[in-house]
Length: 349
Image 1: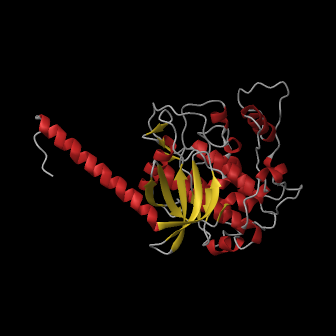
Image 2: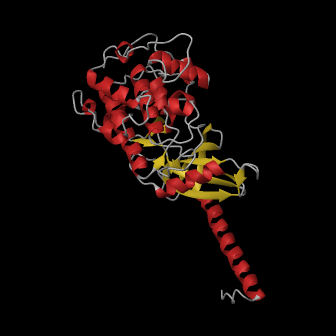
Image 3: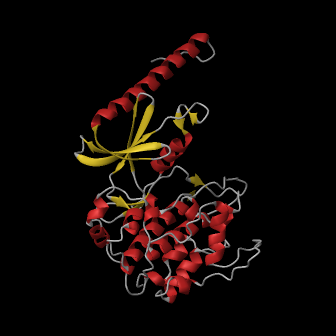
């Protein structure tokens, strides 16, 4: 289509027509892609999306489709929630074995859907299923895979900002993949201000609970430490009911927070008393991930180099993680984590 000189009225008109045709064609292609996928089952619903199990008719394989909920004009850009747009942008730029890949995008009417690999389960299900025997070499494998995914993000100047067991997906080959990048952000600019209302409360670091606007990789590393502890205990380490209660639980378990005013000073509970059979290497890694000072917290590279991973029992192969998925309860409906307790049992580490 010839485009006339922009200085004339006809040029502006023809250029506008050209853009409309291009946009319409792109929209047509997005809507046509919907025919490629056949819904099988509704898997769940979140704040911004519904998730379905579906079949990719072109590739003859099972996939997961995340159908984005359309917000109001005031809450969304072009009718699509900004959180979804950020997730799409980041996922199209990321590629790593431990990051969930975005396979396709398609639209239908006013909605947009993201297509991902179908993942057998998530770490939350594995942790909360008391019929699953989660052994030390399983924990080491999952931690290494998680840290490698986090290391890749941080090396590319991305903060996940919502790491938790339910966002660590596991496929039928035993590969752990980080998912849900709706809260992820680039970092590195010294003047960039962030919101402190990120990360699910139980995995939120002290500086976020105090309302920090400037932060870095420490927010993700604290969450990794909480996930590590949860795999060992089979219950959350700091299950606060409010932000204030979260701070109180952190102080009760560790020691008083710096500059944290308390009428009843807490000496804290040594990690050795919580993880009664843990060796020194495990305790060193865990305590280094859960440092109050984010500048003293281990980053992902330091964590991966920990002696904990290089000593017996050695991390298992991914296939042994896959074998955990054969437990019958993992193939059923997702359970409510608040109904599961450890019953006072301790895992031999």
